[in-house]
Image 1: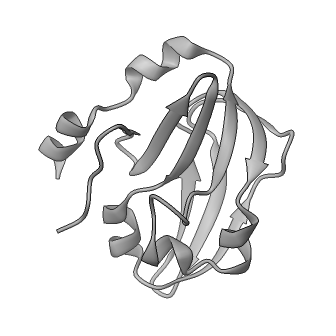
Image 2: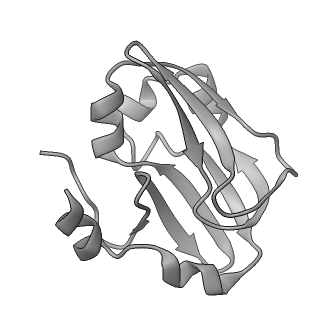
Length: 125
């Protein structure tokens, strides 16, 4: 069964968010990486890109399919995980630790309330 961690927020589209002050670290859930199977490439928008909640922030290519990753919050990309770009399989091995995708400076803190808590996410799966 897929791992779901405490202390994170989740989306209905299988992204996870770790919020520290006004920065959101974003990745895809363990369930999502299991569904995608072997991830072979990751393309992430550039640092400095302004994103609105719901817009595509990355594309993950797997053996089975390609999948867009959507931003759970509006803001500006401040950091991209270059390790995952050069070694996309990190998402399969460690989706919550080494396999995060990017960090976003949160523009609208009110959007955080639209994210799912662990219990709400668990109920869906």
